Length: 478
Ligand code: NAP
Image (tube, rainbow, N blue to C red; front, top):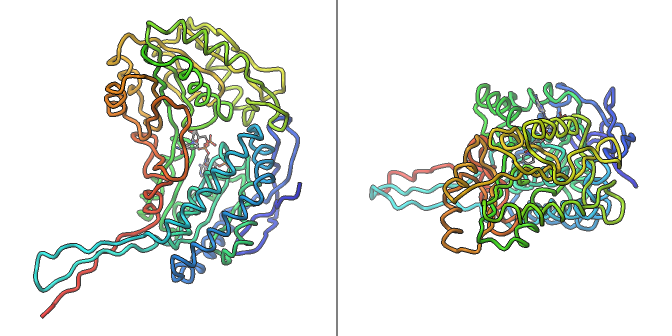
């Protein structure tokens, strides 16, 4: 398979003085070596984006939309290669990787359309001699840092609205999955993005590059997806240095509630879709499953039976549903969280150990007898492990669900329409899904409450993040 492995700055493919290795998490083989760039190259990328900004911003929305639409068509035309790249460097099964490629491309399509709808307002005046309007203008140069768990979609969710708004952008992709980012640059170049509009700085020195992106006075907007700990630090740096606009898409601790009045088969299907996507490594994966006393045992049995059948293996093998975890740190974290839960009295009704498919595979696991104090309830597991916690009634379920500093995604299963409204309103989460485990797409506002983040990606809200509002007073009318 052909792919780019050089960085992309100011429309040039750059080799860099040193390079770092990119591994296939299914077998730890080296796939490629990419440039290990530093602060100097990050500054060059920012300068290129700054130089490209006036001409790109001056294009009409329709002209920018045509380039974004072409980018979308090229992504869809290249979907097989993009899916294989995502699978190879990120580990997710090929069918899921294809889903991500289509999902990622859809942001370019959606924001090509939304580019034309950056409306201002006419505000009814308070004084006869004045007229008030607001106009929307691009923020300026943007910088983005993205994680490995969606090597493509986390980039297009930021780059497409930024470019649609008239901004230019510098991206630092994760060190584990830079190749998909470089493929997007290649397709963007073919689509007609001008030099400097979209830059990709590959690096193994995230903090040095991140410091430039957060502190440069030329960068006006910073968008980050990743862990809450890193997001807090970078957000503080952005505000403390230059008061940038900031969007943060951070960690979660999603509850999935199964009420006694739910259709248990629907709940099992939804819980599997939510918990085991990307081997449990998504920010919106159900982290903990809360089940009402009356159906706890029945749900646990049906769920564990279905989980035990999930096929584990390398993502490019036929029928595989659960791929490897991203690296050895991830395997160690999941193993230790399960070991702690077992030591504290939980039971592994299926799984509970590493999987024989390779060093970075973990067996899909269901834990019963989990309590609120256990780490599997309090922290993001980011692996194929489903802890089941009992609750006695709706009040207790909502209390357990909201008892976390995070507020990204919540799920619940019920057939009672009154409960559906009530619980949807009571959950302190940016996104709530009823009777379904997967919902994400380009038209919805994706984002979290509390320590899960700031701002929204996708939907009409996604464009707003890259626009400034300017108020204009037409004064002195005779
Ligand atoms: P992470 O360690 O925070 O890394 C994310 C990105 O930040 C990577 O590009 C990383 O670069 C970079 N980074 C790390 N330390 C940095 C620093 N000091 N300065 C500048 N950049 C730095 O997160 P992760 O473990 O890879 O990703 C998983 C997390 O992302 C989970 O918590 C998950 O919930 C969250 N997530 C949230 C969303 C959402 O939309 N809310 C979506 C997906 C994932 P290197 O790779 O080079 O270290």
